[in-house]
Image 1 (cartoon, rainbow, N blue to C red):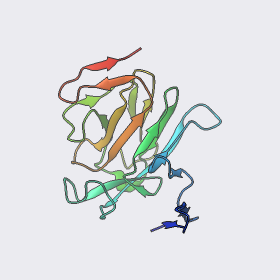
Image 2: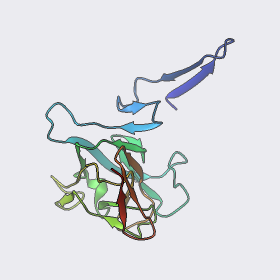
Image 3: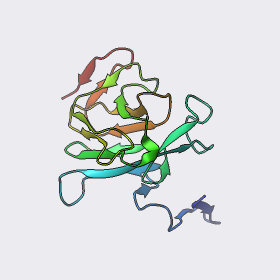
Length: 173
């Protein structure tokens, strides 16, 4: 759906991405990649909630609903240190689905460093924002605080690793 692949007689792999797919999809990360825009204030990601399909990594697990980020169902998101990302939740479909960050997909340990929330999801100006630094763990999960497995994983190129069974974070310098 939107991505096609072909292999030539000389074993050259060609990937084609349909024009209706948002520009923030890159084959090299097999997910959505977002970096700060020219304003250097923050990159805005529009969040909506819809019924999960088989395209969702956690389809059949947790909530029957899932997040869509910029129209893509629960993408893997690449976050870069030094950038700020604002997950805009003002669409009415977000009502009752506050997006937060966790060290694990099951939401055993919430991650709050550099994370701020504003407003009520589903209402105008509601968002969750994360400022990514070198000490942000390499893996975080964006999930609904009220329902299970609606989101997916984010990755940073930081040097910090989180213990997903506790709240310890190791930073390698």
